[in-house]
Every structure is written in C-alpha cells, then in structure tokens.
Amino acid sequence: MRPSPVRDLIVGLFVLAGLAAIAYLSIQVGGLGWSGPGGLALYADFDQIGGLKPRSPVMIAGVKVGQVGDITLDATMRAHVELDVDGGLELPVDTTASIRTSGLLGDQFIALDPGAEEKMLVTGGTIAFTNGAISIESLISKFVASSDGGGEQKK
Amino acid sequence: MSPVAAVEALGFRVVSWVGTLGAMTVFLGTMVRALATPPLRLRRLVGEVYDSGVLSLLIVCGSGFAVGAVLGLQGYNTLVRFGAEDSLGSAVGLSLVRELGPVLTGLLVTGRAGSAMAAEIASMAATEQLDGLRMLSIDPVHLVVTPKALAMLLVMPLLAALFTTAGIFGGYVVGVHLLGLDGGAYLSGLESSVDFNNDVLGSFLKSVVFGGLVGLIATYRGYTSEPTSAGVSAATTSTVVIASVSILVFDYIITALWGV
Image (cartoon, rainbow over all chains, first blue to last red; front, side):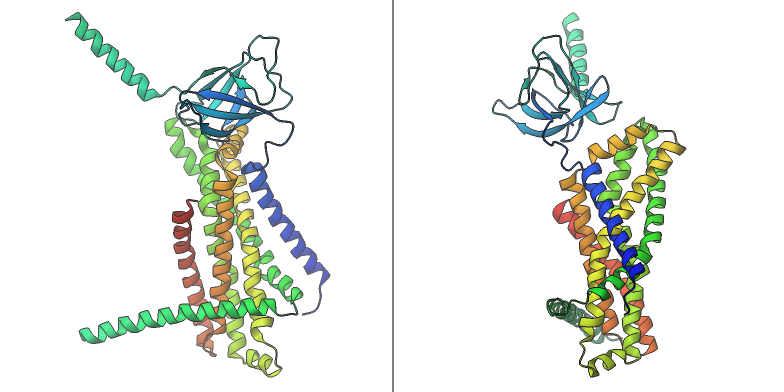
C-alpha cells in the first residue's frame, strides 16, 4: 500500500477525536480528578443520609460549590461524609449542613447555610451543625402513630 | 426423522460448535503470534483504522445523536408525569454510558465494518490471493488478517466514546432547546450521576471486549470461508449474525459480573 499523507492525517484526526471523547466522558462526565489541590475538604456527620451518594452536589443558596466525596460509617454509627468544596470559599465555623431533596423525587444534595462567626473553617475541618435527610416514610409513620395515639387518649 | 437421527444431528451440531470455538481460539493465538513477529505492518494498520474507523464515523455519530434525541424525548415524557424532568440528564447519560453507547456502536460497526472485513478476506480466499501470498512465503495472517482485527480492537472504544458523546449532545438538544429544560440542570444531573469507576470504566471495558469479539469473528469467518462466491456471502452473513448475538450475550455477562 502506498503511503498517503492525507489519509494518515485523517486517521490521526480521527484518533484524536476519539481520545477527546474518552477524555470528556472520563473527566467532565465521570468526574475524574475533580478534587485536586486547592479544594477545601470538610467533614460532616449525619444521623441519616437517605439517598445521598458520592458526587452529589453541595450547594449554597442553590449555587453548586462542590460535591460529596467519600461516605463512611464512623465509630458512633453515624454517616461520616466528606465534602469537596471550592478552595476560595470562606465558611464560618457555625455553618449548617443539611441534606435536602431537589423536587419531590429529585436527587439529594447538601445545602450549606453559612453562619455568622468570625472564625473560618479550614481544610479538614468538621461542620458541627448538621440536619440529616428527612424520610417521608418516617414522617408518615410518626403522623399515623400520633393521630392514633391521640384518638385512644380521648376515649 | 427417527429419534436416534435427531439426537445424532443435535450431537453433531454441538460437537461442531465446540470445534469452531476451539479453532477460533487457535486462530486468536496465531494472530497474537503474528503480532509479536516483526515487521510491525504499521502502515497496514493505519489503512485498516481508516477503513473501519474513519468511514464508520459518520453513521456512528449520526446514530448516537438520534438515539440521544429519542432518549431525551422518551425520558421527558415519562419523567414529566412525576415532576422529575430535571433528572433527564442522568437518565440519558446513564443509559448511554452504561449500555447503549458500547452495544449500539458494536452492532453498527459489525454491520458497517465487520461485514466488509469478512467479505474482503473471503473474496481474497475465493480468488486465491491468500494462496498467492503463501507462494511468496508471506504469511497472510501476518499481512492481511492481524492488522484488520487489531484495528477493530483499537477503533471500537474510540467510536463508542464518540457515540456516547453525540448521544449526550442529542439529548441536550432535545431536552434544552426543544422541550425547554434548564441546560445547567441537564448537565449537572448528568455529571453527578455518572461515575468514573462504576460507569465510564465499565463502558470502556465493554467496547474493548466488543471490538475484540467483532475483529476475531469477522477475520476468522473470512479466513476460513469456502473459496467460492457462495462462501463469501456465507462468511459475511455469519459474521453479522454471530458477532451481533455475541455482543448482546457478552453484554449481559459483563453487566452481570461487574455490575456496569
């Protein structure tokens, strides 16, 4: 087969396009290598995380500022959640982390409500004030139990 | 047909199927040995990547876009009933990355390039070109067959990634521009639900396995075909049928074993 520079160039471009697609899927979509140096790693302990997963978004006032890292069970049987947030953020030490749901059936995310303290959280710090996920089933069962109980007391 | 003859026929089919499986494994070994033997035949490889990769690019990207657009439309119609249309990005992205990208690319490339590969080798066998090469003491497996199979193995993951990317774009066009979803919600849903280790790596593994399968089946069927014009058509048909079925079967096996 005779060498053909044009064909070689087209094959090279094709391979580059394919590698670019793989890179896009791995880095942008797959989230490979998000938590590079410069990010702020925080920890928060929750009683109940519901459907929170690694890579769920972390938001302040609805704006995405980071994502959930590893989720582990700590010694006191609470969920130990790592948050990777933007390094430029200055969060007071009395910031509250709550697990919320976007929409009725949407994905769960962590909402941060910055507090008013002068001292700021540094990387590796732990967010002390947390609100775990609210499960609709437990709310309903509490409601049913309390309305039953109320009826019996009146008798 | 008497019962004994039926059992005999069944046994014959099973034995010949196992025999084919063994012959394919030996053929794979021959190709690996040819790959390890110099010269490298790099220019032949580039030509084969052009034939099976570059020429498949348009149908793969076009089909990917169409599949992503349909997923966007169907997913929207289902999700909007539950008020969860913001999850469209994760629905489109997960189904494309985990399943549809590698499988549909495998089937498309089988039809577009695998059949051509088998037909080319089979017609070379039918017109005694392979025998001619052997007369010149050139190993046809080394010169003709191995570059084709290797090109298929290399091209498949690239094409599958392009298919998936085109599909994500197709879903974006339908969801955001046609149905008026929020573009940020589509992309952030996609990015937060697709995981590198669980989803993207599995998608890559699938496409590599499918590429190897199609390359092996197409070259084996072409190389061992009857040297007649009927043999050429039989090799092409059986390549498409066997490769398509094995892609679907191996897809199930990989999904069941690795959960991707």
